Image (tube, rainbow, N blue to C red; front, top):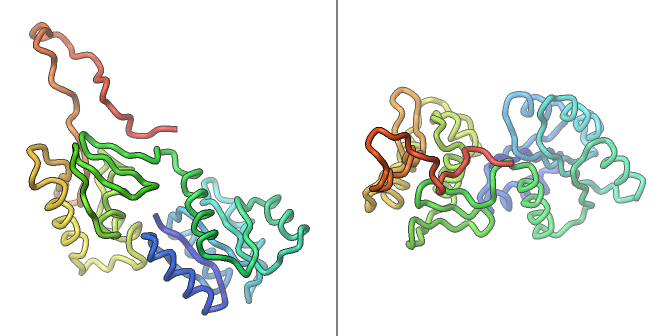
Amino acid sequence: MRILVVEDEKRIADFLCRGLEGAGYAVDAASNGGTAIDRIHSCDYDLVILDLMLPDMDGLQVLERIRNRKVGPPVLILSARGALDDRVRGLEQGADDYLVKPFAFVELLARVRALLRRGQPTPERLQVADLTLDCIRRKVTRGPETIELAPKEFGILEYMMRNKGRPLSRTMIVEHVWDMDYDGLTNIVDVYIRHLRSKIDDRFVQKLIQTVRGIGYMIEGPERQPAPSGTPSGAPPGPSADAVPDRQG
C-alpha cells in the first residue's frame, strides 16, 4: 500500500512518515500543493493524507484536482482547522475523512486502515491455493503452518496476492512497497523474492511464485483441481468449489 503525505510542516511530516512506514506502508511526502498534484498524476496512490494550510495553495484546491480525476484515491484531511464549518466543507468537497490536529497517531492509523479497507475491491483475506494472507491481522499461513514475514516481505506478498495471475514488473513492486523510485540498478526485489520463496515455496511441493521472463514475478495457484476419479475420460471438468475469483466486490 502506498500513501502520499501532503504536509508543509517538516516535523509533522517526518512523524507521519516514520509512523506509517513502521506500520508497513510505503510513504511519499510533498511539502506543497504543486508537488502533491505532480506526484498524484505520476503515481497511483492508495491514500492521500492532506493538510489544508499549504504554502502555495489551499489544500481544498488539491482535493478538487484529485476529485477531477476519473479514478482518485481516498483522501484523509489532517488539519488544524477544527471548526464545524471547516469539517463540513472538507467532507462536502470530497474528502473521505477529516481529522483535527493535534491528533493521536493510533487514531490516525485506525482511520487510515478503515479508508484502505473501504477502497479495496479485494477481500481482507487473500488466498492463493493453500496460502492465506490476513490483511488486518497481518498473518500468513500456508496450510496449517504459520509463516513469519518481515514487513517488506509481507508488503510484497500482499501486493502480489492482490494481483494474482498478473505479471508484476520490478518497477511496479518497488513503487508499491518501497518509498523510492526504481532506478533500474538495484536487485532489491530479486533479493526479497528469494527470501519469500524460502519461506512460502521451498518446503512445499506446489510452487506459487513464478518468474516471468523479461518482466518480473507473478503469484498463481493451479488452474483447476484434479478431476474426481469418477469423471469420464475426456469429459469437461466442472467448476472447482475452491476457486477464488481474481477480483471481488
